[in-house]
Image (cartoon, rainbow, N blue to C red):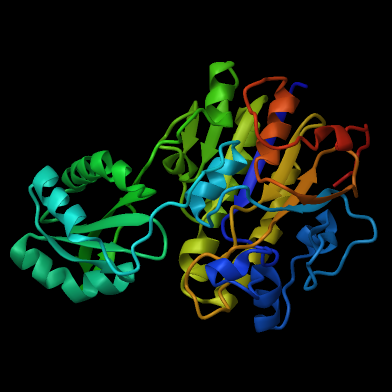
Length: 395
């Protein structure tokens, strides 16, 4: 087929606990339903019309009698529940073991190597809220020159520094040095966290930069690029793949900006693969246990979807999914081990097809590969054949 496939990842939108959720402390998690219940319901009529409420296990969204898209849910092959593992598997490369986390802080061995490799001493080196730790240790950092190092429930090694003391480019250099040896410890991401002083407080800037472990093999993105197909990343999704596989990247940060840039990209690229991730659900609302904010953000995205979808051509396929759950209503501030939604729309596709419970997030990659007629994606099962039937839904 000739046209475009667009995959929109709603970061952290889970639709029910997986059978093994208890092994992760996530029994009872259901990001979508629990959030809706916490706020007394959500107005997401466009997602409902697409068939979100028809997905097995979803009770908070009214099922559509005639959904204009096809629907299902997916479970991961990867024994993990983090952003990197979820995205890699969506693009055809499951992880064999979960990335390392450090709930008790980084061991002395790692921090000694950090000092030797970078020449910088450190403060903290334990789990913390990023906004709180710079407020707490910012003055000591400025006084001593030591970098603030912290982690979270994710597999992250975060390094914060004041821009007037450590320019961002110097901080990025430090992160690259750390990235080089932290591969040995299976750390998913090293993150630069520059901050400044504003109105007497320490405030993080948008010059954050992620340094991810590279995927262990070619993802769908690499395969498409090698085959001469345009691969476009919108948002910061290229960070998750160590910037591999993308032909074009459009940097954006907020959910609204990402959707607006995605909409504009649909005017600029007549063929190819577009991947966008809406990260605010995870970083701003899920991890901070803010169901009201999560619900508002989902309603905002729901309202913007038609403006994106009106620019789809007859050969295009639009897939909405997620990488993991991040239930803002549970005591944990971690990701949650959940099924993720699968909504597939296209004017040339059948509508209302129940795609069931898929055994791998990699089904998305296998489907995209079949669409473009390429080989090399070896995990997952394509659902494209189930959907191929000329029909204009008129959405």
